[in-house]
Image (cartoon, rainbow, N blue to C red; front, side):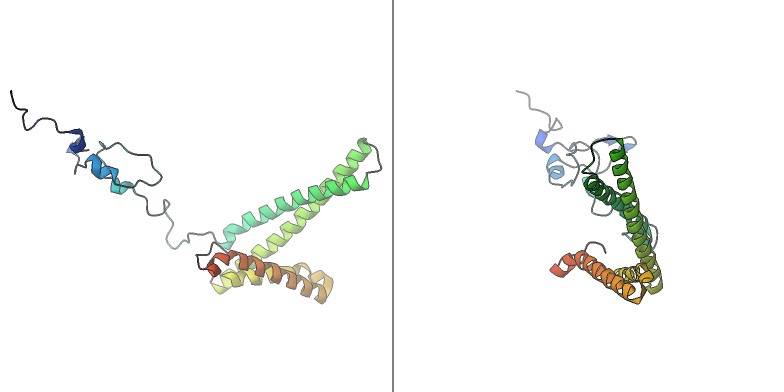
Amino acid sequence: MDKEPSGGPSSPGSRSAGGFGLFGSAGPQYSKTELAGVPLTGMSPLSPYLNVDPRYLIQNTDEFILPTGANKTRGRFELAFFTIGGCCITGAVFGAVNGLRMGLSETRNMAWSKPRNVQILNMVTRQGATWANTLGSLALLYSAFGVIIEKARGAEDDLNTIAAGTLTGVLYKSPGGLRGAARGGLVGLTLSGLYAFYNNWDHLKGSSPTRY
């Protein structure tokens, strides 16, 4: 019997993953065994016959490019827009629900008619606008104080959060006199302190903190 030439096709297990590129040899060849042992996190398995070094496909770094000197987290100025808008929407929704409750309670002795519907609708819109204006104003003051304190100190930490919350309460309740301003500052200090404590709970437990 004739012997099979030594240059014949190799077994499937030892077949290389290489080939030829557009301009000749495409570089080092990788067997299926080598390619099977490479972890490809978040990607579907690749064909073992691709002329690609799979080590280049492993993503161990961030997939975005930051400008020089930029932080990986948003600052207080960027977060101010989200904070103000979120507080306005939250206030409007809460006020609308509260207005609906008040409207139904005040008109419970009236039959279902157009005057009752109009009265309930007026209560819903009035309460929604009031609460949206209140929470939006508080968020605006808090964000403004936070940005000013951050720029003045040149640092971003929990002290800015607590100071901004305290000053917001003092200024918002200042029309009520010194006693009202003091109560508002105490409320702002308490809420901002609890917020800072919540954001640093992971750090206090020993893991990395989230974002203040």
